Amino acid sequence: MSSPLKQLRELRGKTGAAAVVALGFAAVWVVLLAIVGAIAISGERDKSTGVAAGGRPRTGTGAAPTAPGQSVPGDTTPDGQPLAPGAADGTAGGAATGPDASGGGGGGPAGATTPSPTGGDTTGVTDSEIKIGIHAPMTFSGVPLNLAEDPIKGVHTYTDYINANGGINGRKIVLDIQDDRYDSDGARNSAQLLINDHQNFMVSGTLGIDQVAIVATEAANRSVPYTAAGGVEARPIPGMYQLAGSYTTHAQKLAQFMASDAKLKDLKKVGVIAVDSEFVKPLVQEFKDALAPYGFEVVAEVYNQKPVDNPPYDNYIATLKQGGTQVLVPLTDPLTTQQIVQRCAGGLGCSWTYTFSNFAHDSDTALALFVPTWAAQNVRGLSSGCYYMAPEVDGDNCAQMKVAREQWIAAHGESDWESNGSGGSSGYQIVSFLKGALQGAGADLTRERFREAIAAFDNYSDLVSGPITFVGSSNTMHGVERMTVLEAQTNHKYKMISPGFVDGF
Image 1 (tube, rainbow, N blue to C red):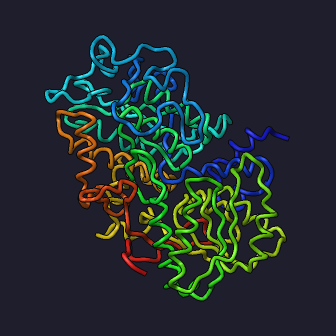
Image 2: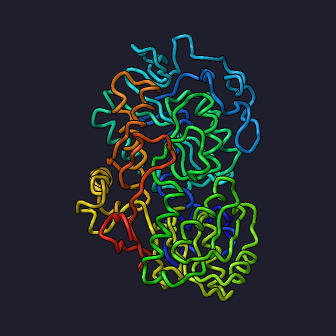
Image 3: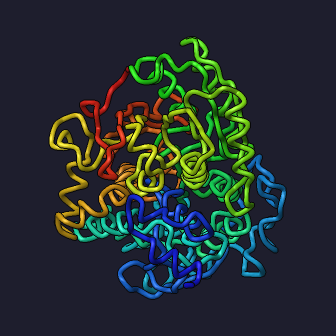
């Protein structure tokens, strides 16, 4: 028998029943391809190899200075663990404190940052480059498998497009991508590298909300701008700017959709399975509050352990069945959903249907893991972007998905879009969100001006999602508000059954 890792690699890219023929170790792990969903990033050309995007060697290792006036504790992360030796006092594991002798963080040919005429913080900025750090689960607790190949490809595709067309005010974006391993230790290591050791101008995270919280906390301590997606608005992540939709918005919109959908509106007994995380648990109450005006009742709540902990899935199913669940809503990763779906299909006699919003359940990869049930039931749910293969993409109600498709096809060809566009197009969201803020900050690029540019977003729409507005609000966790409706099909694809984005249901 081949090794689990070899089975994983063989399963990568397969769809339908072929992706879940083995329910043992291999099938469990391959599902993690979907966990990062629409916004995971690659490290194939990243800092971990010592080479920047475009093949340029990296220079500079000085630690970022400690930010004054921060209220977030500087020596621990949200789970109470120390970040790394020396991190609390602004050092990086013994590295020299403060900028290097040239006055910066080492991003340019000579390792010098570009001074700002206004005296702002230009760490990570040179006359020719802008260093941007990103953390993502490039492995799963060290298992050497790229978990997000298509979204990774998307981030590089759209970054390369910007760089090939003049960059941002004449500067090229240089990506520094680190593996957060989808665990706390990996997140702490990523925070140390991206923020303190490599001195990136700003940092962006992905959907693993516990990892986001750890890195974001360190970024806030060091006054480094930070963006990510997801999160509960009542449990804000320190210093985070929302680049997609919050969990809160998805829960509210899903409740409205369930009340209006012909297949769901009469299924009043709702079961919920949610990640056992302090950053997800509050969402269950928010969802219950959103459902209540429509007569829905949450009859069963399950808080699941992460897949690496070998959760008692059969016990979860028993709890959901005992509650009389009619429709199950997964507020968790696709791996957990896949285990529920497959065990139910394998003879546990679950009588419920499913619906969803967010948590990476709207990707082709995730859908392939839920066979045969989701296709057979034509499961419907919400996405914050138009479906990449929908004919409506050519119209006026699908944001910039058409632009994303055109740039992708120019780089890789149409058949590659048809194979990889589901996840790959999501790279446009991250890259264009950052592009908008970098352009808004102007040629005198500083961290202060970058934050001001994000805070000034007013219906910013160069995205594959609906627009994002921050102006006039202190709630930086609130992002997109518009959704599309998807329906699972038997060809292992979704079909968009709404005419692009809809404001109500």
